[in-house]
Amino acid sequence: MFIVSIYFSLTSAWWWFIPGLIGMSVIWSANKSGNAGNLLDAAMYDEEFYERFRSAGIWQYEMAEEDAQKYAT
Image 1 (tube, helix red, strand yellow):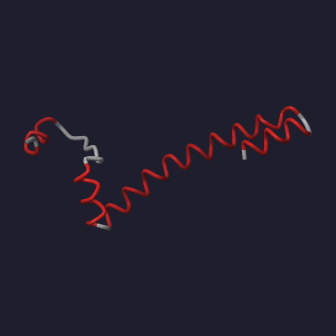
Image 2: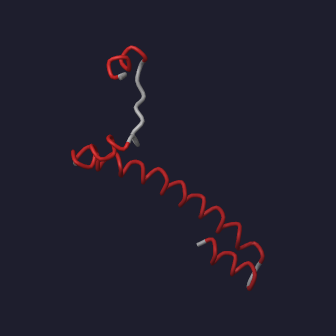
């Protein structure tokens, strides 16, 4: 979308890149939050998928210090 807006700004009117920039930032934000949510959903329903990520050390857990002491090695 942004590349097309640059093309239009060069061939038609200079201001086309502004809506392209705004649209690109909206789509980028939606994809960024959607991808994280998709991984969490997949991990909730597929135990093997969750275990692969857990064993690779990719997941980060947020918890109280008292609770974390139980899992510290």
